[in-house]
Amino acid sequence: MMLQNNAINNGLPIHVAIVPDGNRRWAKERGLHPWEGHEAGAQNTEKLLLKALSMGVKCVSLWGSSVENLTKRPLLEKKELLRIYEDYFARLIKSADIHDNHVKINFIGKWEEQFPGSLKKIMHECLEATKHYTDHVLNFFLAYSGDDEMLDAIKNIAQDKLSVQSITKETVKKYLMTRDLPVVDYLIRTGGEPHLSAGFMMWDIANAQLFFSDKYYPDFNEQEFELAIEDYQQRGRRHGK
Image (cartoon, rainbow, N blue to C red; front, side, top):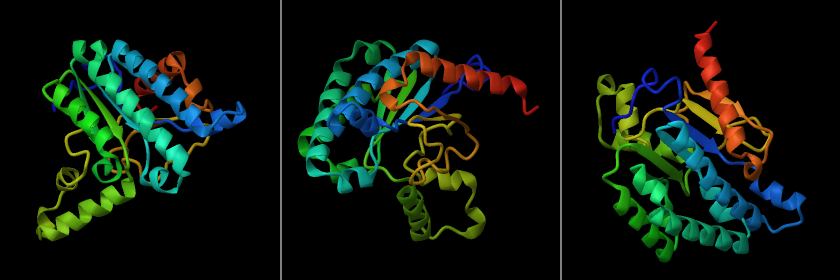
């Protein structure tokens, strides 16, 4: 889809990706169940997305869960996480902020294989209700692994028997789950651990600016997000100097 370029967008990043780390540690420090940290994270997500809209950020991607999150976590935590998704996406369908701002919702990952029917039904309703919107884009990466995404892309390129000479950067992008998204300008990771995980959007973050916050995700509030965006804008004005 077509989004404004960075110059027109007042120095804001076009595409901000967020790795919301620290929910479980936030809950543990408060003597709460892990899923209560996920619940607090979901509530914070609503606030951050509204803040991003109000600031004029066009595309936001949020890593909701990896494949490992859904296969290796205790069963009760997994069930509660899926319940949180169901509640959150059900509210999202009815959100005036989504519809008034013409926000297109995408779900990226292998969620069709991993999620129960009741949750998938709600997610498909989100997709259907927002499919014609073009002003903003909101992407949730669910049951997603960047390593798997890249491996699948390579396998599919090989399966299609493309000539070596015909394979370009554009070819690779075309075979990714993120084929319709702009590259990431700014990657924000919370939780105090400055690293990348499971190849998250590895192709799309190749030239992204990185921001690591010591705050656990439930504490990374609207003010923290605004400060992070301001930091990006300051970097942009340095022009590599």
